[in-house]
Each structure stands twice: as C-alpha cells, then as structure tokens.
Image 1 (cartoon, rainbow, N blue to C red):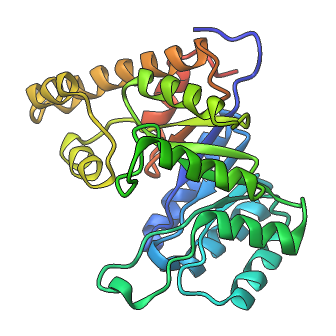
Image 2: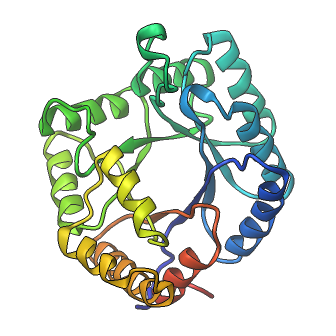
Length: 281
C-alpha cells in the first residue's frame, strides 16, 4: 500500500519498572521516531500507580524533542494534585493529554470514588482552556462494563461534549466492528476523529488472556490459526504481521483518520507493519 497523503501515526508505551527497561525504551522510541509519528503516548497505571514513572518518561522524551501525550486519570488524587501535574506538563511543553477514567487498583473495591473521563476532560478544560488537545478512549466492541451498546456511545458523546478533541479505540481485529461503531457515533452527533487502536500480535497466550479481560474480541478463526503455530514463533510472526497489515489497509482505505499502535515497548512488530503499509520514507 502506498499513500498520497501522510497517514497520522501514534505509538503507545508503558512505563518500564526497571532501569534495564528504561534504557531499552530509549532505543525503542529513537527507532520508532524514525517513522515520523505525530506523537507518542505513555500509559498511567491503575489509580495513577505509575504516576511518577510516567511523568519522568514524559519529561525525558520532551527533552529529546519528542511530541508526547501522557495518559491521565483522577485515580485517588485530589483536584489540587491533578492541577499541579497538568500544569507541570504544560510547562515542559506538553500540549496533548489522553484523558481516561482509569482502572481501580486491585483490592481497592469501593474504597475509592470513581471519577469518570468526562469529568476529567471538563476539569482540564476549565483550568487550562484550549491549551491541550484532549484525547479519550472509545470501544468499538463496547466497554465490558457498559449496560448497552447505545449507552456506551452516548457516554463517549458526553466526553466530547465536555471538550474532548478526538478518541483512540481499544484494539480490535474485526474492521466491521470499527466501521459500524463510527457510523453509530455519527448518528449520535459525534463528528470528531475516532482513531483505531492497533495491537500487533507477538504472543498469543498473553493476547488471549488480556483480550478476555478487557472485552476485545479475537475472532475464532484467528484464535484457531494462532493456536496452530504453537511454539513456532517465526511462522506466527509472519502470519500476524500480514494479518494486522491487512487490517490497517482496510481501515485506511475506508477513511480511518490514522493509526494508534500499542507497541508494548517493542520496535519490530510495529515497524514491520508500517513498512508493509508503505508508510516509511
């Protein structure tokens, strides 16, 4: 696939817990930056459990001249703490935030008050005006806690009504789920970009476990095909790279506004797909 206009790309990292992981991430982002992404994003653990680590990586990446978007949720923080963090991001040159409800840390149960993403968006807009491009999460196969398909779309609309600029979706492998979702969002009055999230497949067992937990469907035929490869990692990688490349081609050819890659802090899976798409210089 070749493209006449630049395709908007973004790459997501998680904060490493070790010094070795931190050093590896420096190499990963330097290599992936050669693919000319619009921005990188860095995740934020349950209830802000990686807050300081995320902030340190954001600052390091800004010092390297990279465009970066921290993930952010209220978690257990007070408004004053959150304001100080957002102000710190603003002062180091961050102009984009991924605003989320966030997950409860295990064991907390009802001990903490849940603050929803639309409230976080409204808070940032109230305190910082239009300084930040605010991106929120969307779920083409519907959030696992949603009561209904339509309710989940209306909840997404509430995030846009509060001031969000765009959305990034949970990953999926059925493009029809994305196209139908965007169509239904349009009917509900959402006209902002909804960027598909792309998960390269490197480990079937890990992907299956995570997908079952977060409500992302792996179509049965793909599960069965991946099971066939067993420990043959080379064949699995060849198949999954082609599979996800074709997914991305279908999305872009039918109007998706960009691609957001969940890199899992690895270079090759994402770079191979983007190379296949003909999006490298």
